[in-house]
Structure formats: structure tokens, C-alpha cells
Length: 389
Ligand SMILES: Cc1cc2nc3c(=O)[nH]c(=O)nc-3n(C[C@H](O)[C@H](O)[C@H](O)COP(=O)(O)OP(=O)(O)OC[C@H]3O[C@@H](n4cnc5c(N)ncnc54)[C@H](O)[C@@H]3O)c2cc1C
Image (cartoon, rainbow, N blue to C red):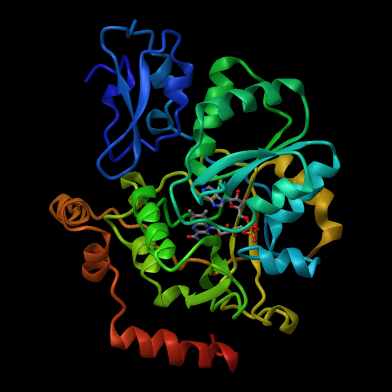
């Protein structure tokens, strides 16, 4: 098919970054949610002038050059500030980089909960702003077009900027800067070393409705460390009462690992780990290699991969705030993104959601079996406690 606009991009390729909608000179592209809750571009053939700008800014249609080989580029690391470490999902590397950026009068872009617990990209230039961005939210994050416009202005201002988000969103933002002729040398792009993928916001909205049946939803976290990092829990504060569920015993774990709940291209991610040009990639260091004893305290540890010279500079500038060690291999290969094309199964999943409701969907697709209760609820915590896992 002739590639004169992004209509040629298939659903299992489009990551929903919005670069196409913003680059279009005649506003012929708008984003629309599909029946799974993911946004896709809709092109008005009437308005389209076939300039092809949207296709050159589309990450799905780009080939990425392999990252330059930076020597000694892999680290196990965590932040020295115990409070930041506790509130971060892994080793608090984002928190350290973000605080450094703010300290340089810079601007940070990341993902936070809105007041009504929607998951959204946001902009911050104060310490309070970056606190809201801490912690992984395992949901497809909404990025407002206006925020992208503000971001492009910020980039042009020459201020130091940290953009932290999924690798595919970063690919879109980088392409947008390039096609607009904006020099983004002042931006440090921080992506995830591995990315399990973006779960539909439709499911998250329904999950929040379930929480609200118990009372007023005041706080949520996907990665609460009260019971430890490896045994992290889904946490909610509802009408003053705190609820913790081990993540592996929560239905959300099934949606995060499920093939029908995540955006289609997430099943075969080609962006994470700096492949699309992020300067630094961060992730959980689910260590199984020999590490210093001090790090086996179940409080969190990150893998940090430096992908560019700019990434090396930023990392060097924050080293005083980190406890770190160079490693050869992260042994972090727990997440397998498989391209399981089961369109029948996927259709059935979303039919159940729309026709029978979220409760029924959970009971069919997110039920925890008694074997999982024993394995994850009893045996695994014991193994972690005695240091075997
Ligand atoms: C959707 C998703 C999938 C991930 N999958 C893996 C994986 O498979 N393996 C692995 O090792 N690590 C994965 N991570 C990364 C990991 O969970 C930690 O976010 C990362 O290690 C950073 O931890 P931290 O302690 O340094 O910072 P934290 O304080 O935990 O910072 C989290 C950062 O993630 C950003 N963020 C939060 N939610 C989202 C979102 N929905 N979309 C985009 N950005 C977001 C925030 O802006 C913040 O910058 C994933 C993260 C996300 C958001």
C-alpha cells in the first residue's frame, strides 16, 4: 500500500504516541479511542494533502539505528535517600534524575495520577510535582496534545528537560522534535529497560469503580513496598482504610501479563531498552546473580543501562546520590513479550467486557487459582524471607 498517510499503519503497529496528529499541517488527523480503550489516529481523506509528514514521524514506520556501544554501560543501582527508595517502584533512579533536573531549574515530564486517578503524562518543575510522578502505573497513560505542544516550547527554550515514559512514546516525541526541526540536545530521554506493556485504561476505570464501591478512593499504588519490593502490593486507601494485595495475587497482574488487555504492539515491543534512542533505560533488577548483601534487603534495586553520551553525562552528575555497581548482565529477563496473535481470543475478551461487564471479565480472566494462592501467598514470601529468591 502507498504510504502517504498513517492509514497504512496497522492496529498491531500503532503505539498511539500522537506524533502524526501533531505534525499534520492541515489538522487532518485526530485521535479516537477504539473499543478496547486505546487511541488510534483517524485520517480525514478529504483534508489530507498527502504530504507524507505523518508517515515520517510515525515510530511504527521507522527503522532504528542500533545504539552506539557505550563501554561499561550497565549498572545495578539505587538511590541513597531511603524515603525516595520506599516510594519508588525499583531503585528510585527516576527520583534521583528528576530531583537533579529540578535542582538545575529544569523541567520534568512523567506520568502521574490525576485527582480522579486517571493515568496521565504531566509536566513538573517543583519537587512536589515529581513526587506525584514516582511509581509505575501499569496502565496506558494518556498524553494530552496540549501537553506535547508545551513540551515542544520547553525544548525550544533550551532548559534542561527530563522526559520519562514508555519507549514507544519517547520514539514518537523524538520524531516530532526531529520533523519540527527542534534541536532536543537539552532533553534526557529515560525509558524502561523492559516494558511489560500498556494495559487498557477502560479496565483501570472499571477497577477504580470497584474500589469506589467500598467508599471514597483517596490513594492508589501499583507498587507499594510496605511488604517489600519483591513482594510488592496493589495498595488503595479508601475512606481512610488501607488495603494491600500482593501484586501476584491481584487480578491486575493477570491483565499486565495478559495478551488481550494490553495494546497490541506491546505484545511484540520493538522500542524498550533504548532501542528507539532513549539516553538511559531503567528497570527492576530482579537479581539472581551474586550481589552485595546490603542489596538483598528487599527494598528495591534498579538496572540502569546507559545508551548515549548524554545519558552517561546525566548519570555521572547524579552518582553522589546513588549506591551503584557496574555489572555485566542484569539477569533481568523475566518479562517475555510474545507476539501471540489470537484475534479470536482477543475479540471474546472484549465482548465479555462490553456485554457482561468488568466483574464477569475478572472472574473469567483474572481469577487467582488456589495453586497461585499457595505459591504466591505462602511459598514465595517464605523463599524471599530466607533469601532463596
Ligand atoms: C507500563 C510499564 C511497564 C514496565 N515494565 C517493566 C518490565 O517489564 N521490566 C522492568 O524491569 N521494568 C519495567 N517497568 C519499569 C519499572 O516498573 C520502574 O518504573 C522503573 O524501574 C523505574 O523505577 P524507579 O524506582 O527508578 O522510578 P519510579 O519512581 O518508580 O518512577 C517511575 C517512572 O515511570 C513513569 N511511569 C509511571 N507509570 C507510567 C506509565 N503508565 N507510562 C509511562 N511512564 C510511566 C513515571 O513517570 C516515572 O518517571 C515498567 C514500567 C511501566 C510504567
